[in-house]
Each structure stands twice: as C-alpha cells, then as structure tokens.
Amino acid sequence: AYDNPHEALSRIKRHLLTQRTFKEVGIEFMDMYSHLSPVYNIEPLEKITDAYLDQYLWYEADKRHLFPSWIKPADSEPPPLLVYKWCQGINNLEDVWDCADGQSVVLLQSQFDKFYEKIDL
Image (cartoon, rainbow, N blue to C red; front, side, top):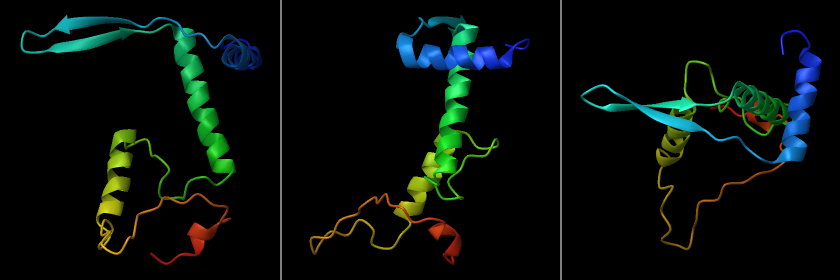
C-alpha cells in the first residue's frame, strides 16, 4: 500500500464491488483477574478496506450535503457520543413526544441546499 497507493485503492474497490465475502474475525479474551478484555484479530487488508470505506462514505455524504454541519464527527468524539447528543437534542425539544391530537414526530430527508447555514439557532 505504501509503494503503490493507487493500486491498493483499486484493489480495495474491486474487493468491495465483486467479492462480497468477508474474512473471519478472531476473538480471544485477556484475563485481567477482575474482568475479561476482548482482543480481536482482524487481517490488515480488512482494516484498510474498512478505513477506506468509512472515509469514502463520509466524503460522499459531505459532497451531497446529507448532514448538517453540526452533525459531522470530530476526532475528539466517538460516534456513540454523537448519536447520544443528537438524541438528546430531539428529546430536549418542548412537547416533542406529545401525540394527543394525532400528532407525530417525523424525520425528514429533503434537498434543502445549504439551508442549515441560513438558520439562526
């Protein structure tokens, strides 16, 4: 991968598009006497493929403006924390779960190009 990155990326794309098979993941547990810690054995090519796919999906999502600017992850926050913050933001809305009059909460996906930049929060 270091000597010829273009060939490595082509191989990863070909692997994702054609094979659709995944390698086994080995798991062992390290005994700490008070608890067990899992140790996963994953092949290096699978790690590189996963990293490439993750970065490519974020690139495509950013290019198409699928997520507002406040939803994009930072290196300092793991993804579960981002999901938690997003859910807390919805839960903190006033009467969001009130469905007394036949109301409901809807998650909408639409083509509002740069709409999020024009909103005063």
